[in-house]
Image 1 (cartoon, rainbow, N blue to C red):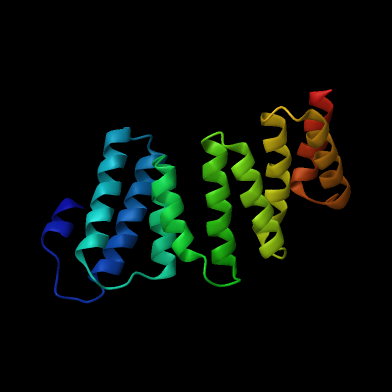
Image 2: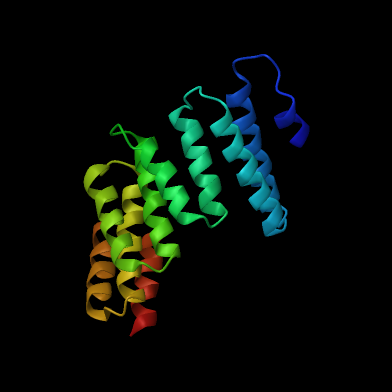
Amino acid sequence: FFLMIRRPPRSTLFPYTTLFRSYVLYQGMLRQNMKDEMAGMAVNKIGSLVSSYPIPITRDDGMYYGQTLYYAKQYKAAREELQKVIDKPDELSAKAAYFIAESYYRERKYDKAIEQYAAVVANYPQSEYAETSEYQMALCHRKAGRKKRFRTLMADFAATHPTSDLADNAEFEIAEYY
């Protein structure tokens, strides 16, 4: 992995393939519960690769990099990279917006997370992330201590998405919170 970054081949595809390989290696480290410093090294190598090559990276590559930063718990940097991906009303933009909302949730910035989840629902209503965003909004209200709003949103979610995998979770959350 490290030799690949030190001696790049002459191919113009090198930055793209290496970025993807770096992401795949990082994901492997996460699955194997590797130490945080190794994960940080992978993020640093990806960052140096991206800054070393003036070739613009694709939206998919930007998504990979943003996710890598997110999983390395570098949420602010992840949001900056993910924001660059949001430029079309498509599934990739919905995914990036969802990860931005999740980063705020992980930082316990629940009001910001609610805003971002609401943006996912409003801007990408047909996306696979819209339904999960509605559910997560309710959880944010619970974490922020707004019990009544939490119960209302969870009840609405269970009623409007009865066939969803999360509908059972919503009903359980409501019952557990009483």
